[in-house]
Image (cartoon, rainbow, N blue to C red; front, side, top):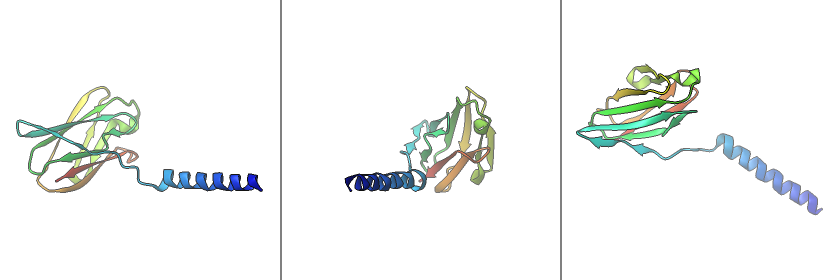
Length: 124
């Protein structure tokens, strides 16, 4: 009897963990850009995804996002900001600057060329 209860509890815990893993929200901390000389700038490391995944920019201040790609996979060799009409190749082990128009507040997504890895820019 005690064995059945233990198996039941472990089974329920595993179902809960699997549900959380696949269906739960796993948002990472947003990073605000540094502002210097009236330009805001932040670096996103491209290595198995984007780090940070979420970048916060100030509305109306010119912005540059630097993408530094370390990952050799072809999926991450391109970044696409569909809302801004931007598509840039990211050479491996190089810094690629992308200027972002911050005139309009909102949330704007970006993704790799295959749309498998995603990130977000929040302008407020």
